[in-house]
Image (cartoon, rainbow, N blue to C red; front, side, top):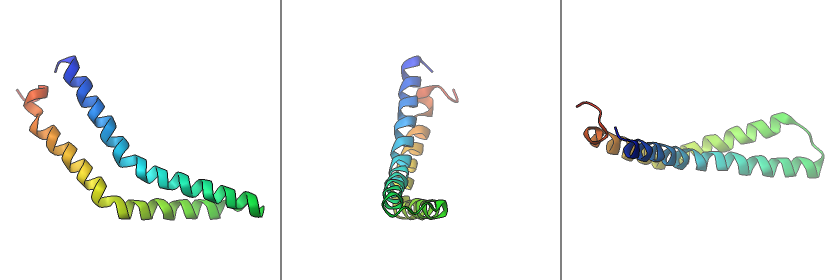
Length: 91
């Protein structure tokens, strides 16, 4: 495997990981900020409220984004497996 193909493969791995993880993490971030603002406004400092809402938001995001996530992972896997001979694995 030459350096340019190794860099291209590493870049593709990072882009795919970012495309899969960013929407779910973004949902958790948005809910966390909204809950922090709500707790600041109401002076309610209950940590369970924050954690439960974040867990629910991430769970719903995973549920609704699962087709997108699976499509991204399948496309990456098919591209990787179809180009194994080009990147120098297996002969």
